[in-house]
Structure formats: C-alpha cells, structure tokens
Length: 261
Image 1 (tube, one colour):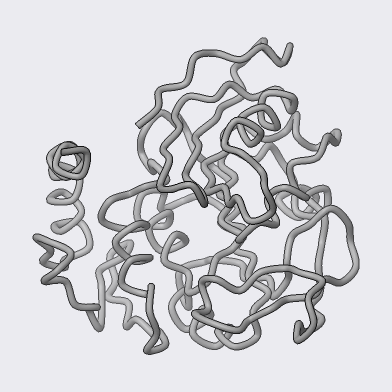
Image 2 (cartoon, helix red, strand yellow):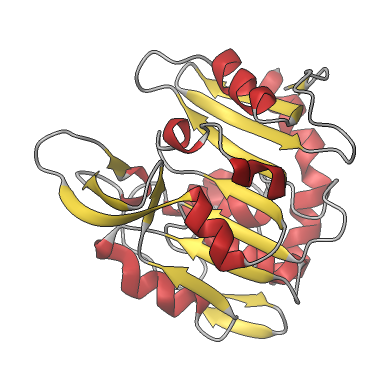
C-alpha cells in the first residue's frame, strides 16, 4: 500500500519531468536508459557504465526529483553536488536553475570521463575530489557499482584527493543556496560543527547507516548545525533522505516537526 501511495503522489511530477527532459517514462519496470535527454535547451548524449543502479539514479534525480528541485528552495544562485557520480543531479539542477553556479564533486577516477562528458557545455565545475572533514586525501573503495563507491579505511581502497566543506564554500565564494549530499556514508564526517554552516541555506541529502548510526542521529546532527528538518523519508533500515533548511533569523538549534514519509 505504501508503494502505491508513493506512486500516486509522485506521478504528477514524473509526468511533468517526462516532458521537461523529453524522455517517455511510465513505470520503472518498462524504463530503459535513454541515450540522450534535453537539458537547458540542448540535447545531452548520456554516457554511463553498464552496471546496476544507473537507471535508478536517473529516475531519482530527474523524474522523481527526490531532492526536490523547484520545491521550497526560493531563489537558487549557488548549488554544490557532493557525490555527483555521473552528473545526473547536476543535469537536473541546470534544467531547473539555468543561471545558477553549480559545483560537482566526485572522487571516483573510474567515471570521471563520463561525468565530464555528461556535463560538458552546461557550466558545471567538476572537481575530482571527495568532500570530508579536512583537506588532504582519503581512501576510496570502488568494488561494485560506481554509485556505491565510498570513503573507507578498508584494504583495497585507492587514495583520492579530499577537501573540507570550508574549502568547498570558499570556492563558491558566497552563500550556498543548496547543498546536495549523497556520498555513501561520508556525510557523517561532513556534518560536523564548523563556521561555514552558517552560509548554507538548504540541505537535501541521502543518509546511510553503515556503522550502526540511526536516522534520528542524522536529523539531530542537522539540528545541531542550525537547520530545521522539513522532510524525512526512510528507504530502509540502511538509509533514507532528509530535507532541511536554515530559516532567516533562526539558528538556535531547536528542531521543528519534520514530515516523515
């Protein structure tokens, strides 16, 4: 029943995005990865590996609009995409916000060429770096689908460059209107107190529960940083999605009542 309700609720947006990106889509079971989509007035030839999860990522970012582009964000001038993978969120963001500054961070060397190809000509600044709790390096484990590559101390990982949120914000050079996080567990290191958070207006993120964390801890981390959680969606006992915003004149850290779906 929950899946049926979710399907009915998302259908209007899915249909609108069918038209927006010029890709027919009815049900996931019938969906096939398109070779091109329409973004910001031009056709983009998509580059992607033949692996599990690619089609689901496209549906999430473009058609279902899980990150809520165009919903409750107000004027958006600056966007940072942490965990850009193949660039699908960046493409959706460019379509919704044609004039915004967009920075995309993806450390996985295996998919860099595809990420650059997908965002070429769309004024997306791509950084082949992870984002973590410091400037330096991190260890990236890429032993499955590229969208599951993660920072870890485990053996078999490769060294990749890493920057802190402070460095990310310095590069943006102004208030950050939207921070998107989907970094396979690295969000716990990013969501540590720091002066830069006062410059972030909205967070739309996926959280991952790989090491015994809880969804409530993810919400509490955002509240401690001065955000109000406005939406929580639990995918499974391994993770979900959260929307949060910093309201003008607030910052006391008191939690509002989020809507859970």
